[in-house]
Picture 1 (cartoon, rainbow, N blue to C red):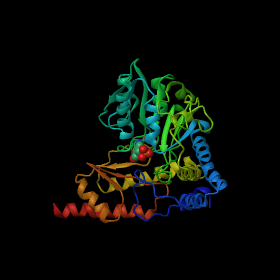
Picture 2: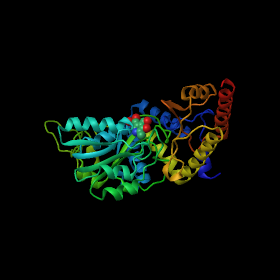
Picture 3: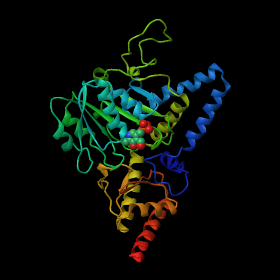
Picture 4: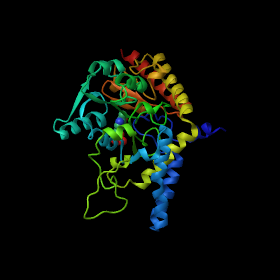
Length: 376
Ligand SMILES: Cc1ncc(COP(=O)(O)O)c(C=O)c1O
């Protein structure tokens, strides 16, 4: 078996799981290693604690490897929202963002603007289809704009933003701040188009909560003030008392306190596993899974509102059935786990989703169509 096949074989959750965009059931390797790390912490021996402490550096190195960045530029964060806050609170000028973004972007930007007392102003855009395209950003762009903050893959529409095109549009000086929660580890993209990339391990990396990270490029570090810098983000190397050292020049300035080493370990293992399997291979298999779901939806007459072009999507299919609540109930009764929200049902497979799960979906949609026919 190839490393990629080994990776696929680790998907051991029950059939019917199509909710990877919400939460990724923990992989066997993450589960095993977190138990081992917890045992080490249970001993209390300084050498054991130090061993688990090494997880922080491992996570930084592995995330950096996937980003094509330096480990010292990567910070381990409690969540992606914490990392976004570190970036957004330190901005000034006008910052373009979509109103339909996950609140980790929109609410954090609003709060950062409030705290800035006029130094920072959101420049909201509401594209009709919710897609933050270069055209949509171009309409809002002027000399006051200092940054654009965008989800690489939108949590609702599944639209994958074109980071290279956004960079080309905004030029080299403005910052491109990217929420990579719905793509990191499963989409092989050139992250160097961005200045800040925030993500976490609890969906596509199968690593559980508490496993956030954020990368700050040198360009970002020059332009973002580390206003939320805490006790781990200073020029001091050890404990300081009776003095208040300045923020560090490195990305560490964008941290508050010591990370949870168990969470850092889970993040490191989750990233290691996708690195070993190959992000491009995972992306290819995920695209096939999405193709299969699109075929099923088309065949069963359910409208799809997420992009169909492979280059414009990742692992999210948004269905827009005529009776969303009834379809959501039918899917749940059939043992399928999806996210039903308003008029859409979000279906999110992973590379390792099994054929039985897709069959369950097809059967459930077939039965649903039949019910509609007989009732009507
Ligand atoms: C696009 C996006 N950004 C951010 C988050 C929240 O991330 P965290 O819990 O790490 O703050 C989510 C969660 O679903 C998301 O979909």
